[in-house]
Image (cartoon, rainbow, N blue to C red; front, side, top):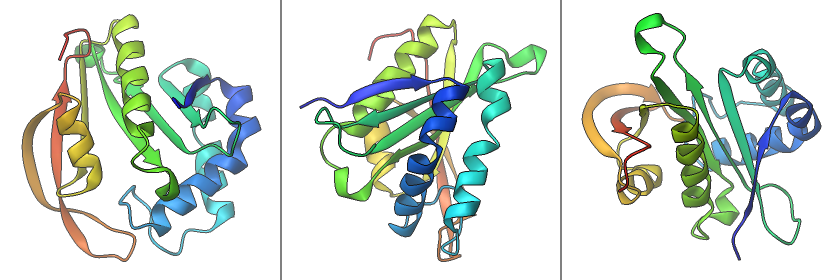
Length: 178
């Protein structure tokens, strides 16, 4: 059954903040490199989500959540942030595609990605880009969704345990069919 994808405004972000914090903790504890280390606590995770409110409010950050159709706890999220520099307003960075480890393999990542891409196209975004840990499951998702690899940077980010890993850069023109 397809997940229910919902775009959040600031009220929705506030309402779902603790669930989003739980999701972030589960994903980081599952080993995903999202910019956080293993010692991340619930208060820090919730505070990070709170820090996104201004960007959600001004529309520079578009944020979605995913919930199973049966109403179970949310199992995923994705966002993109539009570039604010005058020469880059046509592009946005896809950020923090997360799927709860227990929900992987059910199409949640693909559904979130498709919604974010479609919304980007509707918003006039001509180019999406992202980075993800080289060799990760996320890298396979992006490749299978038609994203193009732009290159790899060695020792780019630490995983939750603090080990450095390379990252792969990808891009996609969301208005163009795969």
